[in-house]
Image (cartoon, rainbow, N blue to C red; front, side):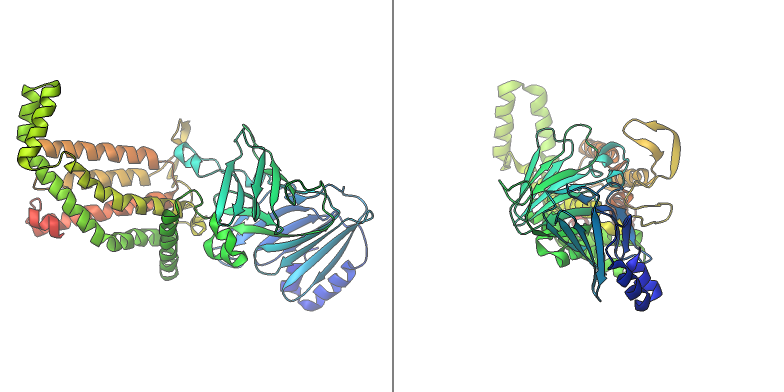
Length: 496
């Protein structure tokens, strides 16, 4: 019986008729409820057997849907016989009540639009939550497998505990507010306003999350009565916050609080760009450009420090090379320190160049995590890329390569090629030929390292960094063009 679909397609008259029929006590094989955001199937005993959530809504052309499992998602320990069902509805929600001959009951309150359900139980035994095959991690190669994981969650006053399913040492999870499990884009958590304690299934080879939840520490095996809030929906800031402000802590939970602020700032900038640009792929590129512009004042300061380090390095290089050739061991160290003192240079002068890294790396990490969990990229296509939340997979290879997987991904090659071009074009005037050669070698090694790191990452993340490299190439070409095709002068480097 699909009451929601009847409501939206057949009108309230048919719904009232079906609801009236449903009020008669009878043992039903199962009930399916489809709303704007959820597709739920209930067993005859009130068990939520399967659930699918869609974001932003089923009718949206950009909707993405995720299944929480094909086996029991939420159940109890009473048995599936001798149950009767009573159904009702209002303008805002559906209600399904399941009653057992023993006196146990379950009552589900399902909103017409939204992801927060209410479950009332009476003498139904411990609450059991279990994911299914459809919720298992998507196949991924290399470092990309880091992202595709199912994890247990416990939420307590903004603090989030996360446990992997393969954690062999954990058999119990406690939380003051919410408890459940998640993957990259979808989360199922429950709360009843009490301290929660769950026995969890974990260990090597565990494929599905499974929790057996008690109302509080030391509680009895069954509840006389309880009211549960059940959130099953997307890992998306606005949606989580509207369901319950405590749930916003789930996002970017593994980061320090100030890195989380960067992630949220980038998310809202990206979302705003997405409302202006009709393609999420172009929005990723626009985000990279926007971040580059916003970071420019700090980057210019970092560039000045970097230039000072390069000038000092170039000035000291001849004498430093002579000392290393003529002296060894302790004598060499003494001569080098004496040279620093004579030149009035601190021995740790090169650390000034790390200021540039300190500026770039936090934003890079923020963009990395924000795009990794951004549900807008799920199933979003761009150019040859079928899904920006997956590697771009230009063509399928005849064999699966160790670490790199079964597909040829084009974006990492474009990213590395642009990084190589940027390395060649970057030619600070302070460097002599030897130091220039050393710098180019280091930048090329870094580009190769990024290639290995990013090859199996989602296309949206690689597209962001590829765009950043393209911007660097354009800036270098522009600087050379303004200088007649020659490397930029010192003043041009500092004022770029």
